[in-house]
Length: 562
Image 1 (cartoon, rainbow, N blue to C red):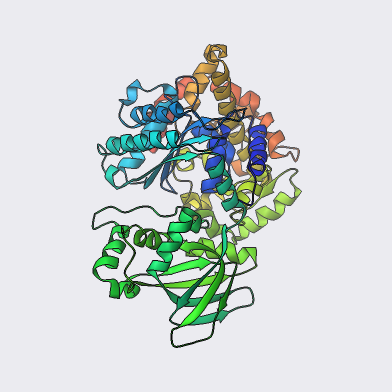
Image 2 (tube, rainbow, N blue to C red):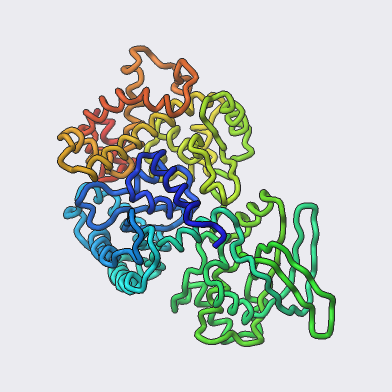
């Protein structure tokens, strides 16, 4: 690899320092790099489990937008060892059992809401892939690999009892130093397979623009299969999900691709949508009777991972007659490469916030944030894939800003469960991003949510270090904050009490801001006494939860009573 482990270790150290996280942060780093996550404070608060009774599950992350669930056991060694202990990999069997098969009432409070959300997402077909990770900072080993095969079988059996469970792809993986280095490289640069390659094509069309050029042609499925055999998932470095596997069902696209390749190879070209691949460079030879020689430097398939994986998993080389349409694209401009990845990757949907990146309100907010100290606001505008590791700690992620505004202005359930709709739904978007939404008001709302999330994290870490050190009140606060959507509910409750807190009427909540132009970090600390006060009353909010999660009905009923 071009990047040494020192690179990602520095990122890990920064992540731990910024959020005051324990060694389990190595699992969060893997999440960040693999799925290009932005607001790691929110992710940490939502996904790190607490206390010694975590049922061998250090991290449980559910993302309905990406349609993934991640269960992780983490281990960080402070000395060099040949391999990580395999017993911690086998502990994941225990985690699977508790999260997927045990009665929810038997789960510890820190896991109930998370497990319920996880199971509900599986049943409602909102989870397509489950990653079961053993994340550590040591070399991979055969012993761990063997244990994870058992873990994968355990998960497969557990999912059979769920509607849609059989359609979920399971990846039990060891994420050691080599894998983290690869994830880091993928985030740092789009194309990580940089070898010189060549193939012969029947003919080609070259199209050139000021910022890019492309060759549109046909390649043999066998050539693609050979590439996959040599480079594996590195071939999909710009493709968020890679090959998803195939199942023998009519509804499974990948199985259909394999069927076509074996039963109708001569028609594969017209039945398949084709591939798009980024390359560092290419050279197209002159025409001859045998076709044209195509030389390429580097390759990453950004659209076509399922086709490539399917034809490479037939169990035998694809027939010579199987041809695949493909276009090779090269560009030295980062913004072009980013958009090629984004718009061509059919498995990686356009992020919801991207729809608003040119909105006049977002343009105004970005300008206003230029005057806010230690604050950077992207307002739906997203950079390249390397932003996963380069993003400043002062960045206010677009999703989290939308969630804080939604919760503060009366809709904690949308904030918790429908963060994409804040950006994609015109009606919802216009409720929270109005002409009266200012940068300083965003800081006002965002800093409140950040203070609540940080409180959850600090209590979780205190419990992990010494469970007996928690006071009775702190246990109650942590129990409340561990419920799904609790942070957004608390923002909503504080917002409804603002007139009482300030001791004067408020004509419009969008006018609320701090008198001084504080940074988000400083503003967050100003909320501490108010969060303390509201947490002391948190037991009165229990009726707003159903099965440890907030819903529109329970929230409305609770505040109708209050």
